[in-house]
Amino acid sequence: MSSEKQQPRKQQEKARHHSRNRNRERYDLGALTTSNPELKSHIKPNKYGTESIDFSNPIAVKLLNKALLNHYYGIKYWEFSDENLCPPIPGRADYIHHMADLLVENNSDTIPTGDKIVCLDVGIGASCIYPLIGVTEYGWRFIGSDIDAKSIESAQNIVNSNSSIKGKVECRLQSNPTNIFRGIIHTKDKIDVVICNPPFHSSIEDAQKGTRRKIKNLTGKNVETPELNFAGISNELIYDGGEYRFIQNMIRESQQFSKDCFWFSTLVSKHSNLKRIDKLLKKIEVTQIKTILMGTGNKTSRIVAWTFLSGEEQKKWIETRT
Image 1 (cartoon, rainbow, N blue to C red):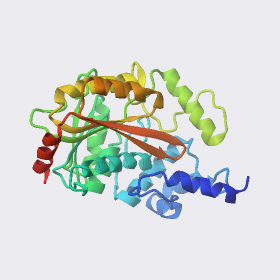
Image 2 (tube, one colour):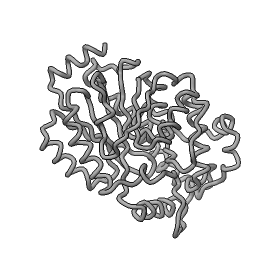
Image 3 (cartoon, one colour):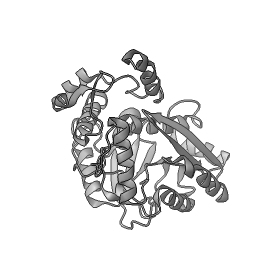
């Protein structure tokens, strides 16, 4: 099949990004290599004959993301261990933009910006990616939690090393790995939105199977013992019981903080988990549930958001933020 026939399909895939996503169009590799010259050696024609990078190569992916953050978001320092998860920037930006849209609904159709808006990132990770995008795009203040002390140290180092972000992100260590919000949300905290990219594998075998499938989709090659192309240490990728068990625990614990947070939300990678999540949310009698579809490249995901606040409580909450 010719590259001309393939082009409309590629454009359609890119168009599935949020309208405010800075990477809706094809990557400007010339500009990106200027931002990060190391990237240049990893650019080569893909199977359609178009210049690209090898997305099955963790080093190439990390260099691309460093270039994207530098060129589009002004992030000069983004260093963390290669063993940690290296997130795809466009997909993470989509989540932030969709949550901004959710806040618009109760804010006279305008996006609330500035540091009065507080976002809790459950599982900030070593890369600190959601706060970097959220602060840059909307000026929100962030609290980032993680069960891994090294990830917290890495995220805080990234924050402190970028003047545009410094002082706007507070990293908090979750000392009890069985808790999600307890020990992180303090008595005086008022959280406008919780975001979370939960671990979605139930075991290392499950994680390797997913990576083999991803590499085959990207390269057409069967790899028996793959290197994870977005890296990731075990607690970032694996949770006993998988994605549903993590979200189940998150939902149940959210009841304790029902008046301390406007919107709770989480990514849901597996479509098969949606019905059970919806059933659980209705069981605990939340006042609203939102399911938001996200499409990035060949992958479709969704955000599930919920709130316990009544209409009157929502109105009063917004009044304190303006």
